[in-house]
Amino acid sequence: MMHHTVRPAAAPAALQRPWDEGVTPALEDQVFAQTYRALPSHNVLKVYVFDANGYQSAGIRFSARVPHEQADLSRTELDTEAVTLIRSTFDAFPQLQTLDVWATIPVPAAEMTEQDSTVFSVSADRITYEAIRAKALTDAQFLDIFGRVWVAPEVPR
Image (cartoon, rainbow, N blue to C red):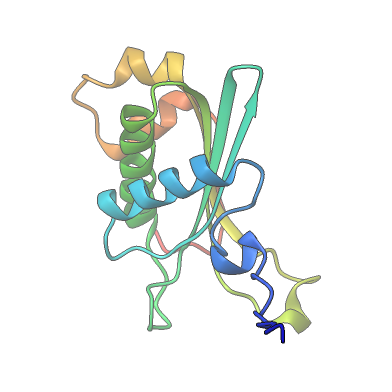
């Protein structure tokens, strides 16, 4: 008599690790783990890492809403978190060439076509980062050097 054990199907990687986009899961998981070492109380929502013939780029999306509260991060707080993510990610992953960091605020599904949930974004590149990493800059100055910062008018100043 043969015994056949029925095992439940494994969940897709995206369901096991919803923070990974699934393009390069092992590297995405490493970047995600690094974000929590840098910002242990932060709410990172998604990590993207693309590797094309040795050129790596990444994206980190985080919540601009304070977890378990209805308060949203201020511009100063967004700047601080973005700088922390840029510095820690470039330092931990020397092969990474570009990094996009953006913050979103949860929007009810009914409002998604009327209201943009992205409130902050910056695109950083390794060449610029290495040129400014040791300079004594405020968070705002650091981000302004990249020249591609966007902040929604709704963000508290």
